[in-house]
Amino acid sequence: MIKVTVWNENRHEKKNPVVSEIYPNGIHGAIAGFLNEEGFDAGTATLDEPEHGLTDEVLNSTDVLVWWGHLAHDEVSDEIVHKVQQRVLDGMGLIVLHSGHFSKIFKTLMGTSCDLKWREADEKERLWVVNPSHPIVEDIGEYIELEKEEMYGEHFDIPAPDELIFTSWFEGGEVFRSGCTYTRGNGKVFYFRPGHETYPTYHNQDIQRVIINAVKWAQPVKRNRPVYGNAQPLEKISIKSN
Image 1 (tube, rainbow, N blue to C red):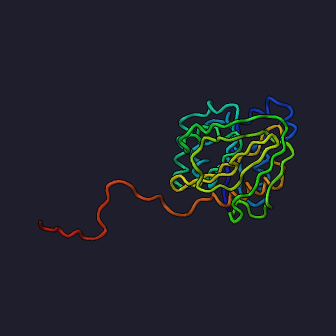
Image 2 (image 1 turned 135 degrees about the vertical axis):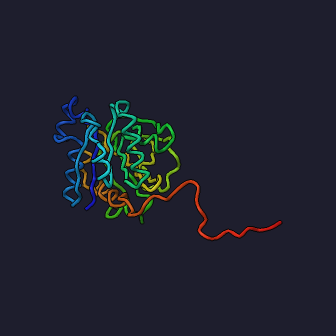
Image 3 (image 1 turned 120 degrees about the horizontal axis):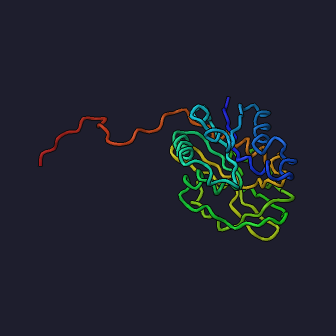
């Protein structure tokens, strides 16, 4: 069984009654809920727990980490970020959602500013599937339409994705690379754009299906990391005279 940890700041839910009404168990609780219904072993972790809920025991047992952050990126400990980075390099999958594009862990793994344009104006969004054979879009139609979402617009300052899965169009005219995959070390990373806290995006069945598919895709491959550094020859090296 795939072990998933859903990490969330859990700050909007405490400060904004609109968010707490949409997600009474928190965004993390909503996501863990549908992942558990799908048959995963999904738990949660939040910013204000000791070690942000990401103890060595939790991280070492996590196959895929789902990350949602917004208000408090700077409050995440650099030590925890380094531990998460190392786990990704060792093979743990990472799914970064919505405003997690600005999280320390995503920027560390990308090596760029990860900045973008944004606007909150209750706009329609269509997420067009641009890689229809990819397992992340299994059981998804040609596009996902969201009645209201926050706009993110290009240019999105990220490295060119290994694979581009979704491109979004917004009612105001912008477009955005909304589903991007990467490999880092032995680990797989998926960035998925939708999920503004004041909209019920994570109750949408297509959005849930994408996250479910992404967890399956991102699960670790059962192998050790390659060995680096000075290496002994596999074969005998003949000494050649001049």
